Image 1 (tube, rainbow, N blue to C red):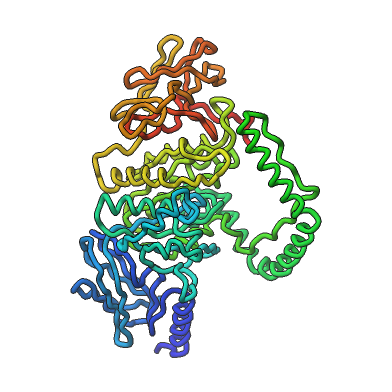
Image 2 (cartoon, rainbow, N blue to C red):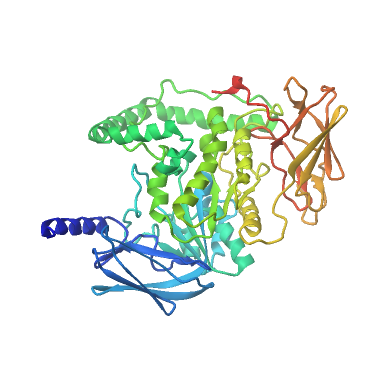
Length: 576
């Protein structure tokens, strides 16, 4: 005989869980990702799921069909809809003997997830062309869902409850008023995500649903599940870091409020005695740096405060940079929702140290594999932005850490259904957040049209193919030449940029592995590289620096990506 007290306890536990987050309707809870205005993925048997009383019979009515299931012992229910063509708006009814829920203004189209760190987070309100874009944002067949920033030690099943009047954490319809609202997302929805949706709306003609899940300053390991980090070969150090946070959580949580209060008091004192005056000094230094750059002078050394600022106490859960935390808080709550694919802009968070930059060649593919595994929707398209140019202009043809992150991104193209866009020509030396997001979004859309929609179009700049040594010269051949190679970003009609004659960005080396700037000349569909300083060259590198000067394009206006012809290991001397 079953114990009624035990059964009652189980039921109460499910009710408590149901009330903790998501959309609650009588005895049922849906993850927040389901609701009014949602966009369902076309041509896919889209999963719909939630929670209810144990044994409850659930019926989902949509497009004239009824899908039936029964809630399991864990309080969960799950159905898959039929596969439908783009269209809408439609309604969906979810019912049982004790309730009926109606979801309205549902569109069927393509759903893309925009994810990564701050350059994907960068809102349309602060984008270079944002004011004009917002004023024209009247396409009601673009819908947005912004996942509020959250980190957690354990995988969450839905996002935390948001205020009823918030536009975050729910599906909303594109409008100028929405995108201009300072409370929506971070300075508005992702500029890249918005522009990307606009391009695909134009090329496909179907509704677009854009889900945003991003957080500035975060490394890739924070976006991978614990299972993903444990996979063979395991990223043991990250698994261990996570376990330490779990083991120490309770004790850390007890002392955290006191430490935080002490820190806040010390910050007030520091600002009064040091910080306010130092802010004035920094402002003058910024102006001096800008003036020195303009005049081609040596940059002034960054000043230091008379004493360091206080350090904030460690978050008991580890913070947004801790392994798995962002996955748990911002990806797990939307898992299995039907999507067309992912656009990703991240890598800066793994580029400060050379060791981390090198590791990215293993870490980034693991992230993609992990998401595809967890989503259970096969090898959906995963498209990403290669890191832009940033920091001081390159002094030598082989320097910095970001070149190794870019190579890791390039190598990730070996995974199926992946695509990458190059933006080493539209970054900002002074700003890690380039305000122009039009070019990255447009180029991402071209990649999407090729990879995800199988269009036959030019989507890439020249891609290194092979090299041939000819005496004191090296001849470089390329794929994706299309209309031909050109020096400098061409005009719209494919002619060369005005006043640009010298091909830049190429370095050449002999067996000593010391690269020097090289002379590079376009000859037909190849580039011939040489230097009077290297009599017997064996390797070439192009745009191999944080902020490289390269200006090789195809005549379709897309830049060549950084590459190297050698396989030499990174120089240990620059690791830090």
